[in-house]
Amino acid sequence: MKNLMSVAAFAAMTMFAGAASAQAYVGGTVGFSNFSVDCLPGASCDTSDTAFKIYGGFTVAPHVSIEAAYIDFGSTTINGGPFTLGAIDVSAFIVNGAYHWDFSPKWSGIARLGLANVSTDPSGIAGNNSDSAIKLYAGFGIEYAVAKNLKIVGAIDLTSFEVGGSDGSLNAVSGGIQFSF
Image (cartoon, rainbow, N blue to C red; front, side, top):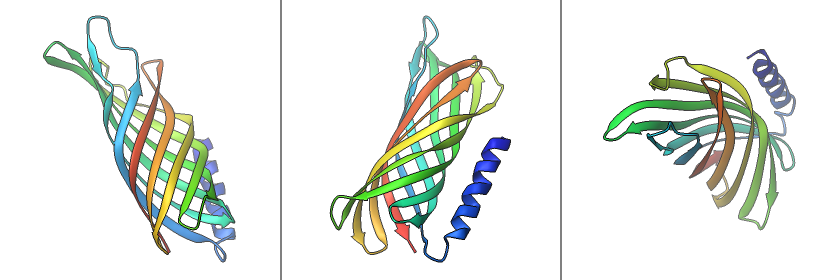
């Protein structure tokens, strides 16, 4: 947690140092998530759910920005026949750098790389010990400028999580809007 706080403090200082020339933006997306987990023998797992992301950032140099985001990846459930045996809820707070490149005046791409504080909250037979771990985060996206300050965005977000000593990977594919000011 100290490492994440240090990264967040550095990101904040970087943002404020370039604030005179920076352009701030906020956005939100909604879509679906996919969990890559091993299911218990004799059980089935529902490994997809609805995901949403809210984020904000500052452009600190041409094509480069610093961002902070919160993603709720939803949950994966463990089913034994008609009964739900347990679930694992996963969310993440993310600090990342982003590189934007323009394809045309209205279309651009984005690549993100950073750290995620991934929190898991299991219930049922999955246990009841919440866990949090710092994980590598990567993301890719596309943006379409509808107006000067409004973009339609699509994103793919990738990270991993830990629960009960086991690791799993997860991703979210989502779409939404971004407003610049």
